[in-house]
Amino acid sequence: MIQVVILGTGNVATHLFDAFLEASGVEVLQVYGRNKKSLAYFSNKTKTTTQLRELKHADVYIMAVSDDAIGSFSNQIPFSNRLVVHTSGGVDMDVLSNKNRKGVFYPLQTFTKEKSIDFSTIPVCVEAENVSDLTLLKKLGEQISKKVVEISSEERSKLHVAAVFVNNFVNYLYFAGEEITKENTLDFELLKPLILETARKIETLSPKEAQTGPAKRNDIKTIKKHLHLLRNSTHKKLYKQLTKAIVKQYGKKL
Image 1 (cartoon, rainbow, N blue to C red):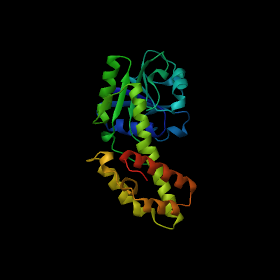
Image 2 (cartoon, rainbow, N blue to C red):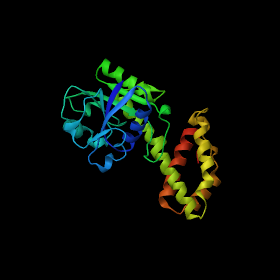
Image 3 (cartoon, helix red, strand yellow):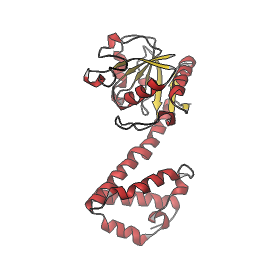
Image 4 (cartoon, helix red, strand yellow):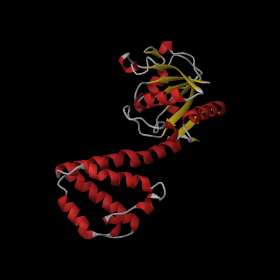
C-alpha cells in the first residue's frame, strides 16, 4: 500500500484524490489546505489539516499547487529526506527544495473540478532523483493510469508547450467561434459535432493528414469572403495568421 499526502485543494488535487480513492494500492492519509473551507470536499473522506507541522508521515507528498508557488512552498515543508513531488508540466524538478528528495508526478490532462474524468486514460509523466523513488512513482502512477512514462524536466517542458497548443489555444479558438456565432445570432451547438469529429480524426490520422479547409485548398475567394465577414479585429487577425501558417505548411501561396 502506497501512502500519500496531497498538498493542495485545487483542480489537480481534487481529481488525483478521487482517482487514488478508487485505487486498491493507494491510501490517501491526509490532504493539506490553507483553510478549512478549501478542505470541505475532502474532510469527510480522509484526514485534513491547515497546518504543515501536522503533516503525517507518508511514502510520497504530492504538491498540487500553482507553478509560481512550488519553490517557496516546498521550502516551507517542515521535514527532510522524504519524497516530495510536484504535478506541474512546465516547472523543473530542481525548483523543489533540496532538503527533501525530489520528484515529479505530472498527469497530462486539463482538469476542471466540476467535470469528471476517467483517470485511467490520462498519461502520467514521472521523474525522480534516484531509482528507488522513480520506481515508487511509477507504481503509484500505474495504480490510476494505463500509461506511465519517465520524462525528464527538459522533455516535460517541451511536452507542456505542445499541450498548450493542442488544449489552451484550441479552446480559445472554440471561444472565438462561439463569439462569431453569437454576433450573428447563430447557435454554437451546431458546431459541436464538427468539433468532436475533428478530435476523433486524429485517433486514426496524423494532424497533417487530417487537415482540411479553404487554406489547404488555396480557396482564395472563400478566404477573402471570410475576412470580409469577420467584424472583430482579433478574430480577423487570428484568421489571417492561421491561414498563412496552413498555406506555408501545405506549400500553396495565396
